[in-house]
Image (cartoon, rainbow, N blue to C red; front, top):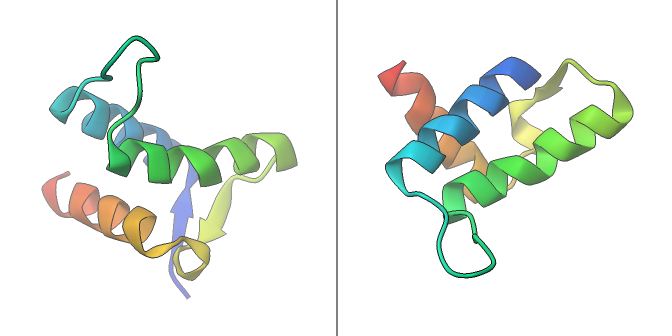
Length: 71
């Protein structure tokens, strides 16, 4: 089983934010950063350091995989 760490999620969120900065008055995140922010927040609340990749939804999984390819 493959895992993603909280540090990888944070780096991926920052990458996607740099590729597509927040928009609008509400500073809405791009779809990739938004999809990764949800499991990231849950990990913080739960005190988790890593989660299985297969628990991520499709958009989050694609976003982390694309980030991993470039880093």
